[in-house]
Image (cartoon, rainbow, N blue to C red; front, side, top):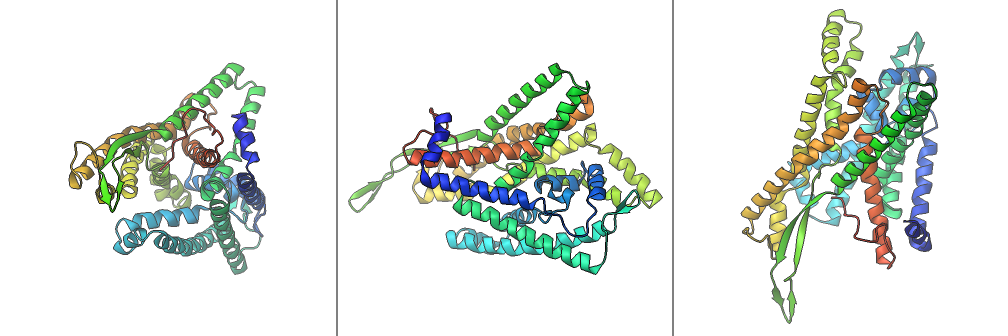
Length: 439
């Protein structure tokens, strides 16, 4: 492992890519400490402390804590992610977008351009909502906005929209010039930046006697086991053997080799968890807006009590939604008919199954079987922190969506670095075998 890291900096091109990526990530973190004008940061911090388990808290995780600090990057990369997901879903039902996807590089460029336009529109809309919301809130009689009005709304919209566009540009530049997926790396850096705070809280509880050293050691061992299991499931694949028939073109013979079709155990990634979290957080978030109405507040308070994180009803619905969205999103990103058609076009077939419809049915059968255990495991990882915190009073903040994102991004980045090393005849991170690519 040490030799592999030494090899990274021996290759000039790879060294430049990594240093360029680190420089842009540092720039992103520096921009995350420039506050918006006219915000009372103390009142805002108190408000977000109360909203930690709400939908705004979830949004703040993906914004790297910038929303709770009201910085120029408060929206983070979420508008771009939302626009990308929207176009992925629309491509499954709109023939024009489907046609663009099949046009190769030019089609992808057009979809990327449409995604950028949608990002700007979403960022402007969300920044307007944030500006209106902030200037209407007060904590303990202290207003969050020192000078509310039209100028505050306009300046906030311009600043947050420009910040989102700049973050989007940083992510795209990292992807094109640096190493790894830029958008994913920006999210990961924001998540990792919160770990020292949570680690410091655990140390403070150890020093105050709330936790024993034995409990802390058990928590650390549990963290290692959970991380290892997440890596295994994330890398897990079902490899379907594929045989290509020989073809004679002129004087050359093509094909005749055996390969495989890799299907990931969890093809949907963390998207099902994000969708499920957003839906489950709506009752608590909506209840915050109807505190003035006594009747409505009572009804919503009852519903919110049923759906508190850690409650049995919350966990059951949460797990069910994760499994549902895992199947739903997998059906969007993987089309068995397209896989079967492409295989048939190049003379490939799965032994024991006829090309065409039978092959598509078999691929769909395999996907439906391997998606379930992957979805259940990721649901377990998602509910694990809330169970340990609410039921056993353990400060186990490590896990959930954050862990899945961090592990996935690190594996993807390591795979790209290893590919660069292997291409230049250096050993990768693993001397035996290679890191499997993620879909």
